[in-house]
Image (cartoon, rainbow, N blue to C red; front, side, top):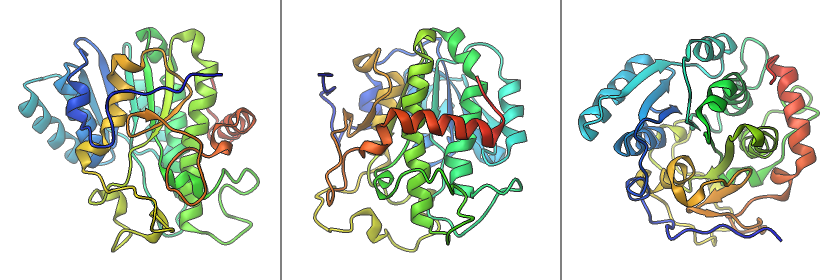
Length: 313
């Protein structure tokens, strides 16, 4: 039986508290969506631990502002920004091609949630394209940089929302059935976890650890910009007992998986509240759904992702 992984951190721990136990001097980190919200908090914590942080942002001006503020706040001058649009395959390829040297930490943090029905020029449903396919293509194209780093870590920011639905392998773009913003979001977040499961297996020999996480219920970031109030979908029972987190607390699990020596060698898992998650129990907004860890689903998603992006490793 596999040992359940726990740490002394919990739901109230902050990214700064987790980062205090890490020395990232000389390590290079990439945080997508690092211009604001959880991504900025994650980038701040990694920079405070000595990492050379690149903030990947859809709007370069916002990325540059965040990088400058983080450098001033931490006294770490090795923080920069670069433009990246995860929904644009050409932008992803250009970013990956321009990367030079090793990459020790990749935090796939950027994401969108519950958007109106929108599609990329290639016809992909936008949430699946942004949250999963863009990060899949980026990470796979950066594989050699991760491998060159030695003991690299990839962190995929998923959500408890994944329990609302699996990957729709026969209709990922909602072309056969009516679009549902929450099912589309759930699919993309399940895909994040399945990507971690398969990449962890494929890249184990390269020393690359790949894990996914639920940051918790955080209100006040740009992720919720398509909603006026926190949706009931976060807690349909109203009895989960899961409290809202601050942005600093929400970024803690990302930082744990990206930097903490407490999870050295851990790969292919899903964490929440700085602990490995238990199995999902219906009615409780916690845990990980069995279908999100299923190795057959993970292999199938990899094949589908290669088909849809044209990127493979």
